[in-house]
Image (tube, rainbow, N blue to C red; front, side, top):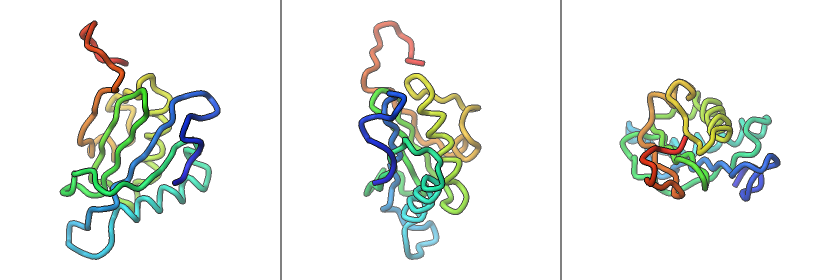
Length: 141
């Protein structure tokens, strides 16, 4: 695993986790996992100093096999986002930029315009926080 302390960061914010699917195969049926390549690119970008408080981990399957590369962006108190159609050669910096923006938002709620371009087009799902209730009829923002 990469990244900072998984229990939180220096500012006391909830930890942000990027889960990278490493099970999918390339759409052309070639060898190797695009997720492995994205995982390596994310770790290299993080080693350069980007998004140090983000935990980056491989996962075996996010069940979005028709849209590799796929990641989930999550934290205990916030929305979970699933993004697909990421290119490991060019999208690692955008993923980390999005993770930093996500960490800064209350409940991790990201408006479309607040996400880097590749993460505007590739969204698969936005899942409400586990702690959210429907008592007031509004979503947490």
